[in-house]
Image 1 (spheres, helix red, strand yellow):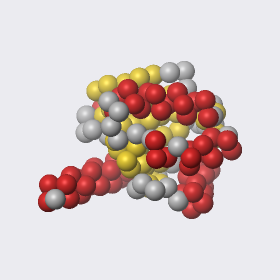
Image 2 (cartoon, rainbow, N blue to C red):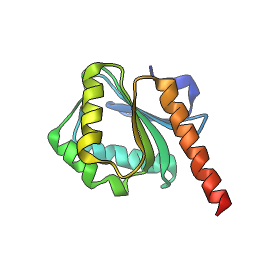
Image 3 (tube, rainbow, N blue to C red):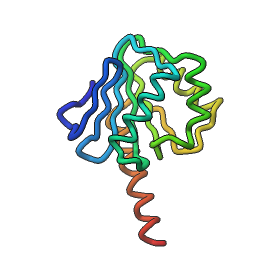
Image 4 (cartoon, helix red, strand yellow):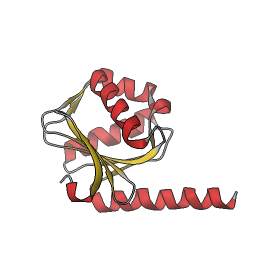
Length: 142
């Protein structure tokens, strides 16, 4: 369900497609049968930096069939959160296994930034847009 028609700028590798949507949200799609490793996380970090221009952004993550995450990558995700280019994250889940993994991560790793698991892609996008608007309004007030 990668909505390529909504992307204005993309970078594609053999493992993922990362794109900036028309609405300013970054969409990360891990291709089927991808194993998320520490090495892939480092590669993705470089891609995120390139697409965001080094600034933090609002991201929705999606995985194709049979995507897995190594235990080292789960640990690394927690360690590198502060250096991430994400300021808020939605994990879009389209099956029970992915939902359990995403909720387990949230429950035990307590991300420091806003994090939501959503089984409705459009509601996940809307949550990010609302959050961005709320943050922008607070900045204007101050």
